[in-house]
Structure formats: structure tokens, C-alpha cells
Length: 432
Image 1 (tube, rainbow, N blue to C red):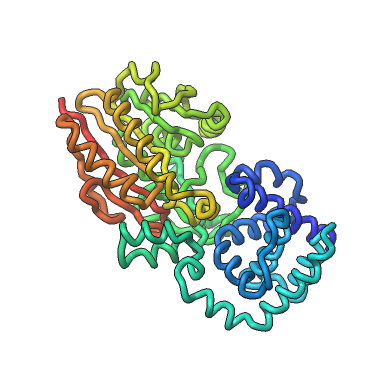
Image 2: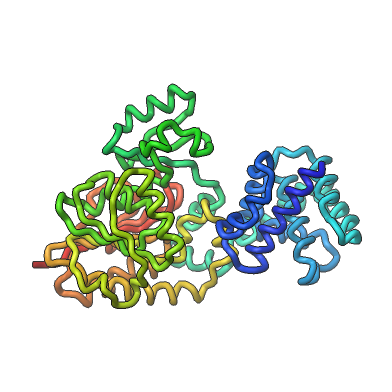
């Protein structure tokens, strides 16, 4: 029990960093995961991802039982209670153990033991009625903030509920086969030999989806560069960019390097410049390239501003623009807690600036691929409609594909479609 309690307490510390301090789960795990015994890391991650995914619903359930809300200084107890509710609702922890061990994890605030115990036992007695009450509004049913639900309704109408449902299903573990080293069929055979169930992704020739996630060290040939972890939707960028031998290629927002590597795997005979605003994140790009035995020039640069990078010209440019990332909520449920409505306008302005600079750096006859992991039209379709209206030398090169939903400009993948994340792509060509 002590190790389990420690795990629960560390889960609360991770959640405090996210809910209280506004860090991402990725940032918080980088700090706290090394402190967690390896045998408990999966448990802690499941708790933290689950509470972030179901936060508003769990909060609603707790508020139906509590006489009064917790004080701000007792956020740790509030979050511990939510971990207890999540265990009772969604984990394979026996109810009596979930209650007892969550109560035991209270720590120094001994007054809270009785509160946590009472709330969790009340939930067990009245579970059906409490869950039924939570289903009466979309924000508590699907655990999405009202502002995001409203935006999705404006953009997607009747499809909104399907998007919300997909966002609450954890994304599968998807792989990108290095086709320069091995065929997808041969890699599937390697997986089968290791009794790792997997299926090919229909939308992209390098994609595989695993039936169950596992550690990358268990993937045959991972260390040797035969395969990488990457969602199928992100793999599409390298296909759509249509790089040719000898091209000068610019990857404007490269970190962590998955799309950079995918481009080089398909066509290593190019000169590729990978840029990112973060030196630390560029280190990850270089690590990925080293493992895959690929070469690219990596530079730290803010591509929303002019610089040496845009005084050169390129045959192909990938602008994987910074965005709200609401298309990848199923992989990053903390987005539902961290994103704010005002962020969308700010991001749209940055995207517009980057598009303008990218266009200036594109050679006549060159191709610019605009991508986001958002499903909001202000960041996607509307961005491209406005750009095309202002640039007579820009023409859209239609995406002749089966996946996603055709837009007035570009094509939108919704979360879960074809077993992939929510992504938007539009491809432009500069007239000669």
C-alpha cells in the first residue's frame, strides 16, 4: 500500500502542475515521472490522463455530493478526490481498495480523510443517479468546456457530438514504417513474429496501428530506425508535400521532428532546413534524425518574424502551424483545461504572419503545405480562404484523396476518422 499511496500522491502533484499551474501533462511528467517507481508509472499516467480527460464530469459528480466546494489552498485534496472517483468509474481497481487507498493517500491534512471517504462511498451508493444527472448537459457529459462546445457546434453542427465522443477515446498507438529501410508488409511480419497485433492504416502507406500500446523498446527494429511512433494523420504531411530529388525543403516548425524525419525517409536526396523556436525541442529533432540515420540542418528561429531563413528560397515548404491542438485532445486531454477562447484569435494572427513569410520564401512553381492539428475553421479553412483572396500568385493544388472532409479550401480530418487524429491540410502552389 505505501507504494500505491505514493503513486497517488505523485499523481496529485502532476495534476496540480496542470490544473493549478497551467503546465501541460508532458511538462509535468518530465518533472515527476522520474520520481515514480517504474512499476507504478503506468498507474500514475492512467490516473492523470483520465482525470484530465474527465475533469469536468468528475468535478460535477463531486459537487453533487459535497456540501461546499474546497478552498483554493486545498486543491490537492480536490484532485485526490477526483482521482478516487476516476478509479471507481474507469479503472480496474476494486472499489474497496480504491476508497481505502485514496483515503490513505490524504497525507498531512487529516481532516480530509473523512471527507474523501464519505464522498467516494456516497458515489458508490448513488452511482446510477449521479451519472444520470451528469448526462443532462454536454459540458458535464462529454467533459468539454462550454466555449469549445459552442465553437465546434458553429463549425460542425450535427457532427459535434461525434467529435466530442472521439476526443474522449484515447488515441491508439500508431507507427510510421521507414519505407526507405523496410516495407510495411515486412514490418507487419516482424510484429506478428513477436505476437504484437497490428493492422495497416488505409490512408497512408507507411502507417500501422497497434491493437495495444507498448514501450518503444519492445518494437522490433526501433533502435535501428526501422519504425517510429507517429499518428497516421501526421504521416500524411510527407506524402502531400510531394518532395522531389534535389529540392530545397523548409520545415518551419519542426520539433519534435516526426514530420521532418518522414520527409527524409521518403526522399533523402534533398537539402532540408528544420527550424523551431525552441533550442531544447530542436535537440529532440536531432535525436530522432540520429536514430534514423538521417541528415538535416537544424536551426533555432522564430518563423513568425523575418530572419536569415526567409532570405533564402525553397522548392517545398511545410508550415505545420502552431494551433489550438483541439484535433489531438484524445492524445492530450489537458488541452481541454489549458486552452482558452482568446487563444484562438491570437493563434490565427500568428498563423497568418507565418503564412505570409513562408509565401515570400517559396520559389515560383514551389509548393507550400499548410497543416494544423486543429478542427476549428478559423485556424484552417478560413485562414486559407483569406490568404488565397489576397495572393493572385497562389493557386490551390487540390488533395485528391479519400480521407477526411473536403472544405472550400483544404481537407479536414476529424478525430478518430480512419483511426487518425484531427488534422487539417491545404496545399498551395506559387505561379511561375
